[in-house]
Image 1 (cartoon, rainbow, N blue to C red):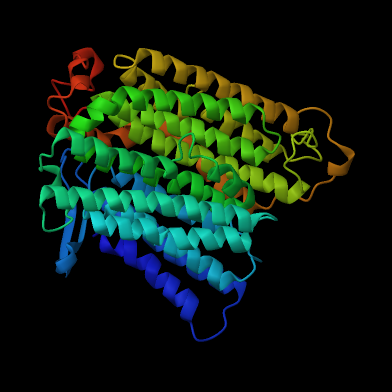
Image 2 (image 1 turned 45 degrees about the vertical axis):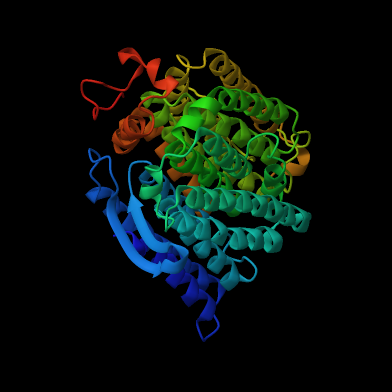
Length: 511
């Protein structure tokens, strides 16, 4: 059930790259759409057969590979990874559909997108630490090339900076995995046996510190964030969709799966500092976004702020906050994808992303009225307006975290208020007022540009009205994580019955 999610994109990439006859740009794009559509359909099949009430791993695959190194091809799926696998398949399809038909070097371009898809889904499914690291590094080269070849004027600098930061992240993660395996005396890198190993608290703190910095670079958290705005500004819109919507989630997924899952005692020690780190990242990202003039850079800094909410929920580690952390990852993936797509359309039609230049694009006769309307919806969702998925995820984050870290939660709530400030500045400057003379009679927006944004907007509203469609898949797994990983942690003591999802009926949805 799980291997096709990895090998269908790899097979599609091989066909696109090595097909003996020349492929036109439209043929390369068609192959990529067919491959990603197949992966998306298979993801729906897996989703339909997934048992939400089963907290353990499902559809497990375990094939010996390089046993002398402790490397096995071990895959598994639970409520923590399932939503992210679905998000990855969906946003990869969105990115390919929204790519320009006339993109340069199309065979290489679509090959890199498909390999990126395979690497990310492989990381989410891996139940062997070394296998996770291989997939974690596999996505590095495709994304580097996607920025360096198809990016903006400063693409070389942005791609190299991304490569260096991510390489350091990988080194720290691999070092922690090696240290954990050798310290525990395990003969392999399989995830489950390592969970049961009891290490001295000092060793746990050291190994967890390396993982926190490694995944903190990937998320990214302040002060390891500087590569992200540069990468977003130079990357094309479809690449930015995947970078913000999926790639950053590798870091937050690592926090929950490996940091919290492998080192519960050390996590409880670090938790207050992590919550403070989350508040700093949220406030810094929001305040810096207010000062931006480039629409894309503003959305990039908003991602830094929203990722801080995931860290806050993970630090609190209450049943409700852990469910909220997964929901926040999904909601941010959808909202950021929508915003980057819309900014890309604005840049394509006007040739500018400068908020000091753009004016009146909501003009119904000669502007971009539909794009402006969808942008208003996107910023409302990101600002936490009720009725949309952003409100549900942020509300649950704050509701689950406040009993444990009230001060840090209040600071993050201030960050949410600042989100409304900088996104209102964006909408007011770019879409209201009198349309500038240089933007009169803009080229019409084709349905190929509108359709992906409309689909994302519909999902944002639907999941805002019915969040239980997402929560039901993750709730049982996060409760099991609390029960097995944190039985004696101090943060469990503050989660009274009113603060938990449901103690009498643990599989019932809080929503």
